[in-house]
Each structure stands twice: as structure tokens, then as C-alpha cells.
Image (cartoon, rainbow, N blue to C red; front, side, top):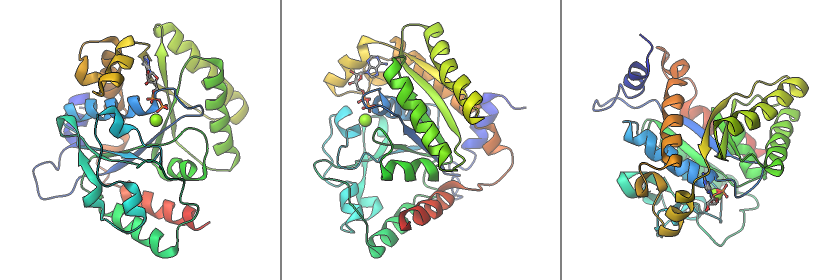
Length: 293
Ligand SMILES: Nc1ncnc2c1ncn2[C@@H]1O[C@H](COP(=O)(O)OP(=O)(O)O)[C@@H](O)[C@H]1O
Ligand SMILES: [Mg+2]
């Protein structure tokens, strides 16, 4: 039996036991800014959690954090305190609505141009401790291909690229895929088309990117799903309440719930009896090597 319920059972099989969870790492990114990455990340995390998975959101938009703003929270400690070795990973994990856990990227500071060896050591050791703590760590990155974002994309097991149907967003999404590909990296990309008028617009947008990637890069980039363009998203942002909580029946919430279902179904390859191959350990190993470059 390989239906969604079975996959979900496998994903959470360790819940309640003293055994650790199989932590998987997912990165959400985009070519262009403002396409809805943070809203998508937050609400997907909430939807997955509502289905019984434990999720940690890691805001990796260093210094420009807004996952916390979307929840109306001002965390005392954030990624900055971890990177500066002032706090432990457990000190900077915050609890948001519905118990969702997150790490804020902090605000008002620039990229840490380069981390010292000690800082890097500390960072990777701390993040390593998250192994087994949650089922999914979802990194929300900044837009475009900054050096930091690239590392998160390359180190994660799966990367979701968010775009809207606007030509500028499509072009930038493709440019990002092409750049990662041209650097010789194998990344498992999936597309989410946000702010679609209808299913058809979502499919057409996804097809454009998929076909070009297939033809010119020989890359398969499947669509994970489409999210309605919905005025409730903006309303929820203004209220600083995640839209899936503020408007549980709106179009965008329905889209996210559908994507969460499809996402879980798509994880069957990760639960088919194999113990975790690559979770946080693999992620940390890769990040460590990339940071040293
Ligand atoms: N599905 C949607 N429908 C309508 N508006 C949206 C949707 N997704 C995002 N937006 C709008 O776009 C703005 C930017 O979203 P945000 O998640 O902060 O983008 P990013 O993280 O990519 O910069 C939101 O404040 C909201 O007004
Ligand atoms: Mg954002």
C-alpha cells in the first residue's frame, strides 16, 4: 500500500517513540523577490504540521527576515546570535501560532561577509543537533542567487522555486535554474506557481519553464502546484496572521492544502524503507564544504 495515509504514517513513524525522526531539508527560493516565497513557506509549513508532521521554518534571508513579521512576532534571538556564537540553536528556536517552530533570520544587518573557521564550526555543529528533532526543516531564502542562498540550494535535498506567471518572474526563475545547472550542480528542483488566476494559467506558466529547461538544460523540473492569486493573502499579511489560519477556507489556503497533500505523496521515495540517507548530516556536510570555498 502506497497511498498518502501510508506515506504519512511512514514519515511520522517515529513519533512518540524515543527514536529520532528522519529529518529532511527543503529549501524555498525564487529568482525574483516579492513573488510570495515567505508566505508560501510559512503556510506550507503550517499545512504540513496540521497533517501531523513536525516542521521547523528556518528563515535564511539573513538580515531581511520576514517570516516573524508575517506572524506578528519579534523574536529576541535570531540567526545572527547563532552565527556570532552568542546563543545555541535551542535558544533561537521560537514558537509561533499553532505551535509552529521557526528561526528568525534577524533584521538590519548585512550578510556576514565571511565566517571565521570557529564560527562556521559552531554553526554547523549547532544545526547538526536538529537532526532527528523535526520531520522537515524548510529554509526560506532571499531572492536571487546570493552566495548564501546558493549554498542552501545546493545543500538541501529538495528545492522549491516559487514564481508568479509574470514574465519577469519566469525569466528570473529560469535564470536561477540555469545558473545552478551551469555550475555543474545536481539539484532536485520543483516549481510552485504563485498568484495564478486559474489552474490553466498555472499549468501554462509551469510548462514554459519545464519545456525550456528540458530542451536547453536537459533538466526535468516538475510542478509541485499552483496557488491562487487571492486578496486574503494581502489581508492576512496586514493582520500579521498566516493566511491559512486567518482564512482557512479561502482559495489560497485550499491551494496550499492541495500542495501539502501532493508534497507528502511525493515523499514516498524518501520513506520506502530506507533509513535516512542524507537528512541534516548530509546538509551540514555540504554546507560546510561550500562555506569553506
Ligand atoms: N497567493 C497570493 N495572492 C495574492 N497576493 C499574494 C500572494 N502571495 C503573495 N502575495 C503578495 O505578495 C507579497 C509578498 O509576498 P512575500 O511572501 O513576502 O514574498 P517574498 O518572500 O517572495 O519576497 C505579500 O505581502 C502579498 O501581498
Ligand atoms: Mg521573503
